[in-house]
Length: 296
Ligand SMILES: Nc1nc2c(ncn2[C@@H]2O[C@H](COP(=O)(O)OP(=O)(O)OP(=O)(O)O)[C@@H](O)[C@H]2O)c(=O)[nH]1
Image (cartoon, rainbow, N blue to C red):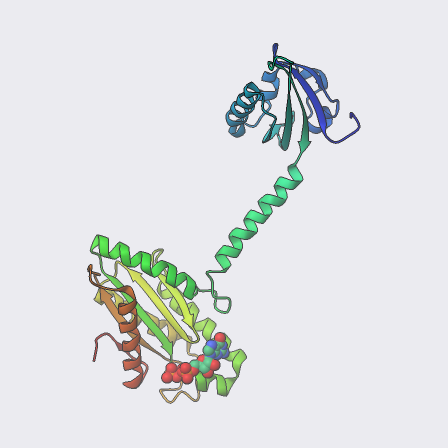
């Protein structure tokens, strides 16, 4: 047993002293075999954050006479820590009283590291699933998650909520003329500009799909939403993205539907979104490269 990776040990229940611990413990944790005298030596060598719950759990299980296992970080003599799985068997006398505890300690650091890596990857994946892969701004899924929450916040607080829906003008012609790859690049640049315009932490710029984007602007009144939309146009104009076949001008332009609401109990987030979308199409039919903020 002393040649295996698992480290065997035995504790006498009456005295709470180690009657045996495998010599491999020194290689694993740095503490000599002879230094493991009582359960206190074991408890003191458990990481502070794991100590209380591990000791309480193991004592309770042992008192009940139940075999158990516990994962915890053991402190090494050098001050580092190693993840241990302690598997404990409670040895009982014929009358049922506890005589001793015997167990094995396993080094599970590699497994814990792999588990941590998986958790981290899952978090990254979760974040990525809310990003539009082409432009890097938030995607429709993110908007669909955040918008209802902001709606409820605005309704409860009585603060205004603004939406700006933005669509690139004659983007089909852009793609047809410059090709899809340059079309993608154009989308990235427009997204970048819009994202820069909605830079406050509670503001959101999301790509709704195709060449359509939305700015979700909590706590923003009508006037401030207009300034935001103006800012988007200025920033986009400064990019000077050529669009030879636009028909509107020589540069890429956008049309926007804008709206502001202090949601009341009867209002519906979806209805409001549809209304702003209709305003966008009013801006399109009125000649493009403009805003519309009222219903025709
Ligand atoms: N390059 C590129 N093009 C896209 C992408 N998604 C959608 N499109 C293109 O966007 C164009 C949208 O065209 P339309 O819906 O006809 O709109 P439009 O030409 O912009 O015309 P208006 O909106 O009326 O000004 C289509 O040609 C789509 O192929 C994308 O991810 N990359």
